[in-house]
Image (cartoon, rainbow, N blue to C red; front, top):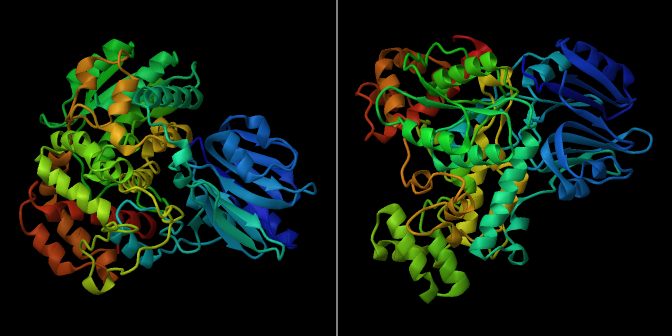
Length: 571
């Protein structure tokens, strides 16, 4: 049973009987009940923190000046300024009536919401909401279209009708007419302002190291065993160093798939030796049948099905070792501002002038294995023109052409300042994309995952660092490399390439191409007329190859169909 399950029930009107009936219908008897006030009731897993003050209750982990949240008349902006973590906070007046509900900025404890009558409930898992409200699951097929069209974008809408999500940094507040208003009380743009910039490389490296080490020390209690996914890449190696610095009771595991593409054992061994972390090496099976996987009944498609074997290995090892948390460097490339274009050079052109951009152009050319003039042209273009995708790119994929959305759905982070630099806009966008991949893993039934690099203190620090400082000596993520110089082996700090899973995933798709045909062409998405059956059939009629872009568009389709079957069964 997931150790971070909870449901918080809030009465928003006068119907007390409906409120009592709602709480009584929660079928998970493993949860502990907390009667916070006559209008707020929380049921939470044993061990999940529930912290109550005179006018605020906090579910989940909160760090920093937690005393601030327990003071009378505390407001959401005060909590955000003084605290961080993975929490849901509910503020109330002196009589116990709920006034506001806040989800932690960059917090990874979900807050799915359902409303009916005079009741509103928030939960970590949608099954708790459906049970409480006595509802059967119903798929929102418009969500399915958006999910395919806007890859890696998580908005408030979920794939289940009647259930939405309070996004990280959002707050619901009660208005004078008793209605509730949703607003973002934390956005990344506040940390990109000129008065917060850290433009000295040495100070930036020190600030980053302090933020990462602090996040790790808070998220992972020293005496509780945790398991780090150590690939040997920079991001997971940085976490290994931070775990060692904090003297955390950590172990490391490095996974590899058949073949040589993902074999990074020599780097993982070097990091483990330097940091003193015990290392386990495991080969992940390629015996994955994407059409018969048991899918989580989650609010959206979660973990890619092709990674299920790795997830199972981690779950089994975590159960065997009795770990209380899995530690992941997910999102490190994004948070550490690994450039995906010439935008950092465009930022220099805008801020410091054309002459000052030469060095950044040269560094980016080395990083991307491109010519100086090619990067210079791209940077000049980005410095003079609006972004190609102002909000989010649209990926038609295998959608029926007439169903491809024309308008990108809204998100609180889609309103940058008018003078935002192209590189910083790209930095924020990649972080937002990374947040789509932190939930709904099977191993969370054993222990939760912690993502220190996607925590509020680390993200706020990296947003203060100009994009061009992250490139140096032809290497990306330069500030992170400098921050842990002397703590990690030079061969790890100097790595410019890393292993991948493309060959592994394509081999699985090719091995099961025959089963994928009826799975997709006779599945829920096909029956609903959502996917272009001819295009899917054409893709499946040829061998899966790395140089065929269509095969990569097939993977999210398989996951979406599998997710729908997890709720509805075989069509």
